[in-house]
Length: 399
Length: 69
Image 1 (cartoon, chains in turn purple, brown):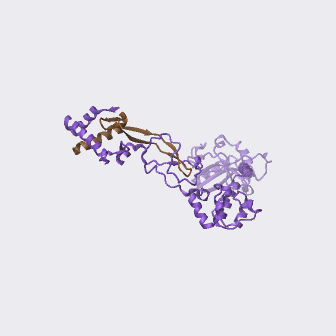
Image 2 (image 1 turned 60 degrees about the horizontal axis):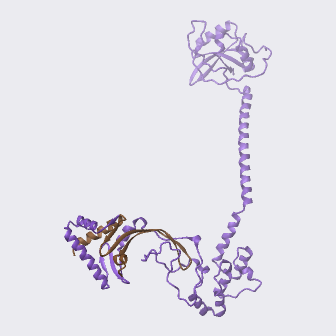
Image 3 (image 1 turned 180 degrees about the vertical axis):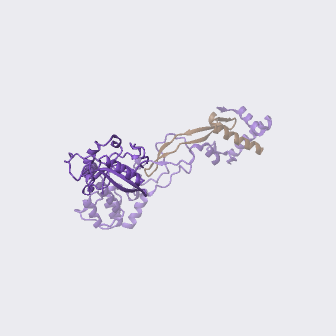
């Protein structure tokens, strides 16, 4: 939107609160004062706005720093970014010409006139080091210091990285190597060449770069990388197979333990059911069997052994049969009740065994039926017991 | 010339330029706003830099506009 004189006066009236005539008069006065000062060669400064001055018969306006920053607030603080990959060789300077002031190239908008500190060019930074082009003034100094031969070397075209060795020799004033050694003395990425240069001339800055190249060569070995990856994959696979295999071994080990269970002398239990639900035929026996911690019993595949005199379900208990197993059908805290039940079962013809056990600090009296050489015999005999004992019993070693 | 007027003139110019408006001051010139894009610039030593964009205030004197001088 364009603000013309009328609109400007309206804005000034609103801003100052003065009358229109007064504002118009003040504006005309301001314009005439600016022109007068400019024509006298003086500059007219308005605080917070900028400076008007005459330059080449043209009125110029330079905004104040405050106004400039205010207008350019979006990009304030941005600095030129050096484009590393876009480095271009500087145009060759003629020796007769004095170095020209900065010359802008590739300029998109050429109307920029004022120079800011941001945009002013400094002297070329010596980041190029010895690779940079030798200035004419420097050439003269070299000529004075080193004499004619060295200046011939330094006046050669700008040295690139491959000519570093020669340039270093020239700069340090040392003797040149013989013609046969010259190719080796050049700064190439060859180990032999590097060693030759080290022996001929001590150049500490060149050492790290050569080492760095060596390391990169080591790291960029594709075959080695592939071999390493294959070895790692194989190692992972073998370790995984071993872990899986060990797992299988552990499972089979537990099976072996179960297989050897029959030889375990610890107390075994057939069903784990508590004996509290056992209902006795005799109404006089009203004691309740307490549950006990129990183990487990595994079934053996052995066929039932032939009846032995020392073992069996029926008959009298023998001392020799006490090295076997019995079927516990009652476990009571009262000894007298236990003995009465034992007597009753004995009267029924069962071979009874009365034993005691301490469970959680409490004594229990266990009534067992029969004496069996093996657990399998006991299990076989359980089938012949009355139904009330079929599900409420456990098998234990007598001694 | 009144100091209050000078301050008001300065503030009006700043305000309108910030709004990207052109201010035509009869007898003096036109204040305006211009955006300058980023551009590449090469120094004498061969270095190429990317100059940042920026917004500037422009002034075209009246004599230039009408070709009086």
